[in-house]
Image (cartoon, rainbow, N blue to C red; front, side):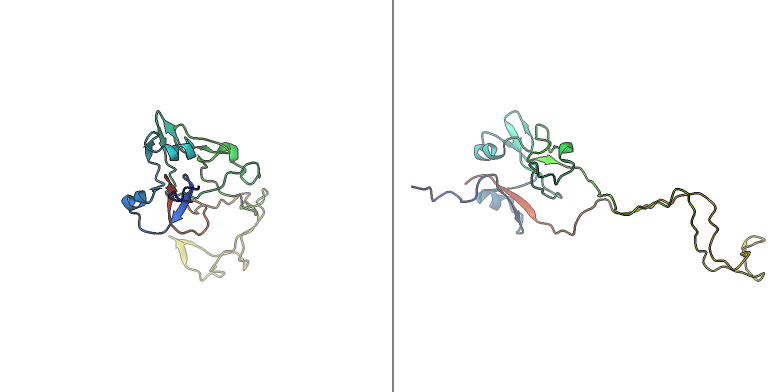
Length: 187
C-alpha cells in the first residue's frame, strides 16, 4: 500500500514562492528558503541524500543553494547551449563545478553583432554645430575668435583615431521579477 501521508513533492525540489517569507511557517510545511545556510547532514538526512554536497559541504555539514539575487539555469548535459560550461565554479567550498547542479557562473555579456569602433584608417568626419561663418562671430577664448574658415559644417577627414563607448549597466539581464526560492527538505 502506498504511503499517503508523505508529500507528492520530492525532497530537494526547488520552487518559486510569492508569499510572505515566514521561515517558521515554511519549515513547518517542510520548506527552507534557499539562502545558502549550512545544515547538519544527520539532522536533515533526506535533503542531504537528495542534494548531497552539490552546493558545498564540510565535515558532517552541507549547504542549501543560495539563490538570492540569482537566476537559475538547467544543467547543459551536452546540449551545447552554455558556452561557459567548463568555467562554472562551485557555489561554496566542497561544491560541484562544471556541468553539474550547484555550479555557478560569473557575469558575462554577449558580444554585440555590430562593431563599436571606427575604421582603423580613421577617415571620418564630425559635424560641428552652430558655426559662426563670418567675421561677426563671438570671441571663444579671450581674444581668439571661433570663426570657421568656410561654410562646411564638417571637420576634415585627417586625424587617425578611434572612439570608445563607455557606460552601460553593471549586469546584462532580461526583465525580471523577484520571488523567493524554496527547497523541499522533508516529505
